Length: 330
Ligand SMILES: [Zn+2]
Image (tube, rainbow, N blue to C red; front, top):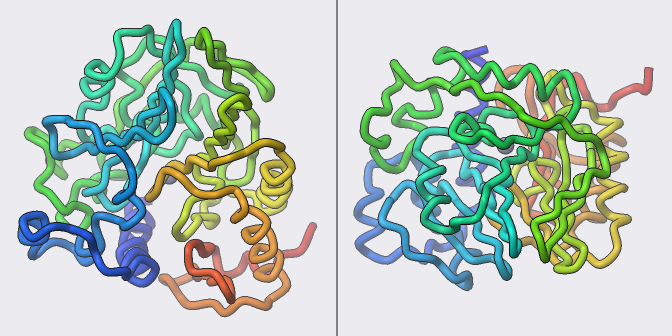
């Protein structure tokens, strides 16, 4: 497991530099603070952030962006996952959709943003989205075995690489070391099903089970605002579809389901950039089918895994097990 995690991480370095090589908008001071850091750091900040409203927060680990009315993206730019969690506020309460890597204290950030009662829900159970769950009592979880199994947390051997020098553009937060970093366990307070509606007062959010990336992957839809949170089922970057828990047939069905949702103005993914136009989704499906038909060029990521890059599209790609493509139905 730890070997595989190490390799995941190395490919992200390569992918970030290959896919996001646009000129950086970083100012001189920021550039110099990144000197000597892993290569992916040199591409920060991503140009997409230049037009967003950034909120003041006196902590260098997180960056906060107001991405829609009542929606704050809580971004971890200086760790190679570039995870994005979202605080979604209604008139009565707020939902924290994902809690990041658990390397720095996300609950402290959230406490500066709202006094409303917080409910946590995760886009799926992978460690880079549930890291801060332990700080909360009110946690919704999908009623799946995969979701239940993740409550135990992660041992140091699985995620120590996540705070290694090659994973970070900044020194780790005080007290965080490779020797001691773990994913803390947590307790889901309420299990929910596909179609569950979360009422935050003047805002309601529909939970949609879209398995594929994991058995418990969900999308979250704010119909009134036209906002669709996609978790790891879509983000701009190499979409990870190689894990043992990934199901490619289910993923394709879920892509179609996402495309069929009417009234979506923005996709809000769980990595890299917080606002993507939904017109990308049909392109993802075409590229996915092209990949399965053997039409896409592949490059080796590490032994047994490959990257498929769409022909006319550079904002996303697919990271796959080599033997998975072409795949047979049985
Ligand atoms: Zn993720």
